[in-house]
Image (cartoon, rainbow, N blue to C red; front, top):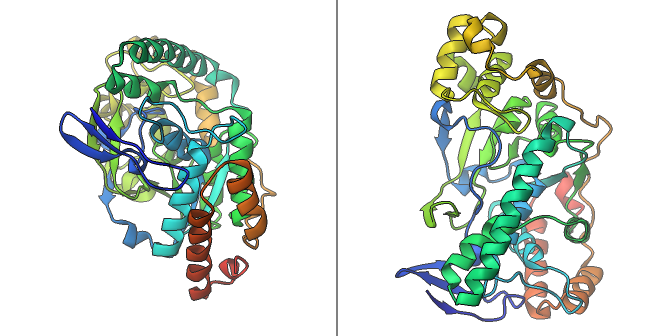
Length: 375
C-alpha cells in the first residue's frame, strides 16, 4: 500500500493505493458491511445518479451517515483525525464536505435523524456488534505493530463506533450549517420513514432496508459522491451508484402487502430477531406468498421461529416515533461555524470559508422558501 498523506483538515484528500488500485479514501461512500435485514435478492430497485435527486428533500439516517466517515476518513496508519482538543473530527470532515457538495451541486435538502433508545429486542444485536468491534480493535492494534497498514485499515473500518461526543459535535455542526436534525425517540429509520410517509421528505436515505419495513414510501441507498464501498469482510472495494427503492413498486411486483414484507424479514432475520436457519429472502418470499403469514406456515417451520415474532412485527408496523417534530432550515451561522471548525477543531479557515461561500451561492440561486432561510 502506497499512501500520499496531506492535511485532511485542509481538505486535501489522501490518495491510498491498495494493490495497485488508487482510491481517495475520504471519498469512499459507505464502508461497513451490511447491517439490518438482508432483502437484497428480492429488492426491486432503480439505479440512479445524483442528478436525478436534484432538488429533493431527504431524511438521512444520521448514524448510518456518520459511520461512513468515521470508518474511511483516516490517517495513513488508519487512525481517526482529531482536533487540537483530541476530539475525533473525521465525521465532521465528511459531513461538511458532503453537505457542501450535495447542496451546491444538486440543490438537495437534507434532514438528519438521530437514533434514540433502541428497542429491548435489539440488545442481542448490539452486543454482537460490540463483540465484533472489540475483536477488530485488537486485530487493528496487532496489525499496526506489524506495519500491515492495509489490514489495519480493514479492521479500523469494523472497529468504528459512535460516542456521545461524536454525536454532539455532529449535531452542533448541522445546527451551525442551518441543517435541521430530528431526535427520534427510538429507531432513526422508523422516524425517517414516518416523516417520508407524512410527505415532509421525499425519501429516506440509508444503506439499510429497514426503513422499508417501517413503511418508508421510498428509500435512497448510496447517497455518495464518488461511489466506492469497502467490504471489510472481503478486504475489497466495489463500485456504487445511488439506488432508489419504491415500496409500492416492490410490493406490487411480488404481490404482497407491507405486513407480509415484514413477515418475510422476520423469517430472514432482523436486528430484533434471529432468522430461521436455511431460509433466505427468496425462500421466505415463496413461503409467505403461499401461506399468507407466519401464522399460516407449517408447524415444522413455525417451531423454528422466534417466540416473540409478534413483538418484532409490531416494532416495524407500529414503531415508536415522534409526531411533534419540526423540519426548519435555519440561517447559516458563519462566524460560529468558523470558530467551531477552525479554532476548536483545527480545520483550514480557507477551506471552511470556501465551503460556506459555495453553500451561500447555491442557496441564493434556489427559490424554495425553506432554503431561503439559509441565506
